[in-house]
Image (tube, rainbow, N blue to C red; front, side, top):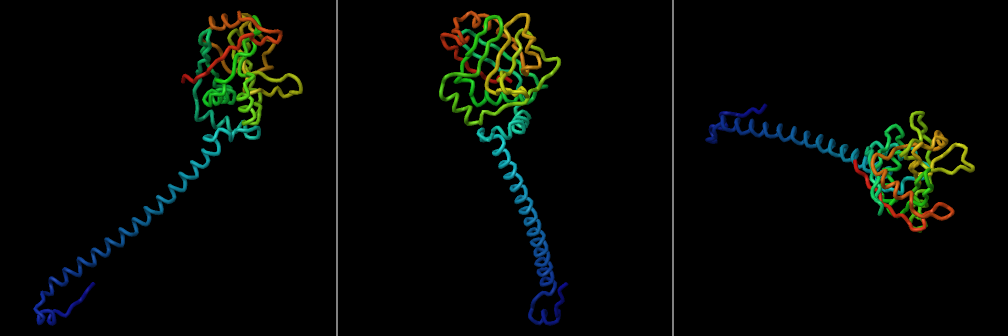
Length: 250
């Protein structure tokens, strides 16, 4: 603490009590200032750490989610698994000139569900058509002769998806399944861009555990009936293109 010569202060006509009070206040302000600076320093360090964490998180998100071209043939499963966690919608709507078809996507085939939601959200399907109408069998979409469609496929490296077969997921009437190549494809890897809906009222059970069933039609069966009646060529491609758009509902 501070000590003063009271006699000297009195001789100088200075109240020693007031001087002591002044220095006590000064000392008190110094202590407050010290702790305030220390607190501000700690807060600043805390803010810096939080900022660093946030930037790291944003950087990670940018690498895996935001720039869509980060999806490729080498990170397919990891990317779609993470994407599925952040995009949990299960219903989509196909719009055509014949009407709409509402689809329910299954949650127990997470990679295929996430893939379909991903392609829908980046509007990949909106430049494609229903390119195959096999009478009383399937209605297939997700491809076109549009150059933009091919560019989109190349952009993502024409990635493939491992099958997600489930014993209880059958090719019933209205089943939504993923197309794939049959030749030179022993692991039954899925083409992510093309899908089909079973239009045979008896189902197409010879395809069970050959193609991944990842959803089903829940509305718009009358639209499927209308589409099934269009004229097609020898390759089952409709004479007049059936354009479509697909949007996420929830």
